[in-house]
Image (cartoon, rainbow, N blue to C red; front, side):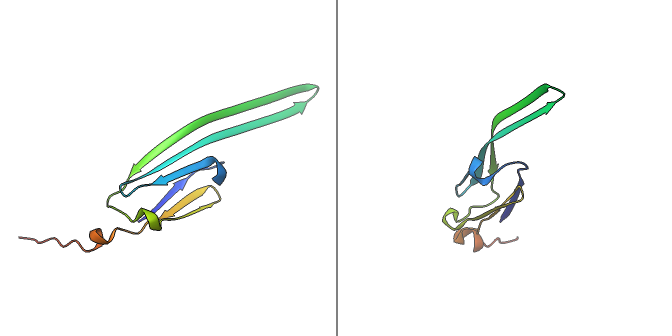
Length: 93
């Protein structure tokens, strides 16, 4: 299973990703500060906020073999299915 999450403006150090056999939890904190000085006037803006997203998985995975990559604001998780899920057989009547 491959999961891609767009997190623009975030850095890897600001993210906490937890993977269980049934779900992925992504928690982070955004911090944005801008400052400008023009014609003797100074303007500063601060934006802070925490977020959390829990994404249920369609099948059980091997959470000890998850691979994660964070590049250009995109988190990509590669999660192999659990062995017992790969070998399920469905009989059609």
